[in-house]
Image (cartoon, rainbow, N blue to C red; front, side, top):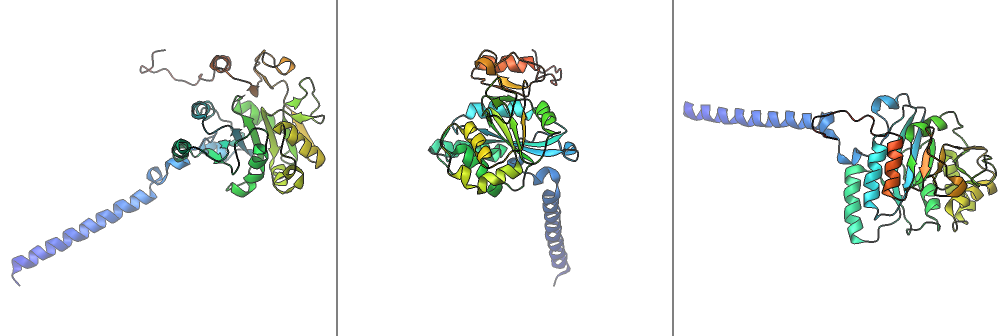
Length: 299
């Protein structure tokens, strides 16, 4: 064979080898790189940093029950909870609703899941007092990839202050716990009635019991917060109970003796039905205090 042909063949072989080798190196870097391996589905609301997790004392899941069509409210609440954290706890916030029923929901909610991964869709028909809360609690042990110390059910018209909430839970029992705002409103005895549906916390062992016991299974219709209290009383559960008063309350002037003025030690403010109420609460607690001055922003 002519020497020139041999040189050409060798050059082509070398080029092919180098192309393969470089492609392999780039592929390996792409797989191993921490910046490229992640996906948008990992962007769920986690209310602490990686460094905080090593020092967290407990894990809390906050499930905000709402309807699928409440897109604007969900996006607003993502802002509210996305800027809060506590070094005491590893906290996840999820939005909870029943089966989707409209074509547009299936598309728009799918986009939210791809971007934020902070939605739980239960196998139920959307309702307020016909079993949704039971389905939420009873489903968690089967659908979650890991357990939590506490699970919270919260309304979408409540403002939770994460740091005071975590500080309030930290010294309490991790077992057989029932925490919230006890009803009736003037009562300070958490063993009398039940915790308001604005937001109450159950320890994980109670969540597991709800999923197995026939007591809640056969008693799902009625005011959901009142039902939970009745389940626990009938089952002899929740020997550790805590009412977070005056730190949890209804917005001033909204509900008689369940309301009082905003106070610094607030854990939760309920019945925020209008935007002006939300703005007053956010301003009172100065939630944007960490905003740094920038020439890009002219306030």
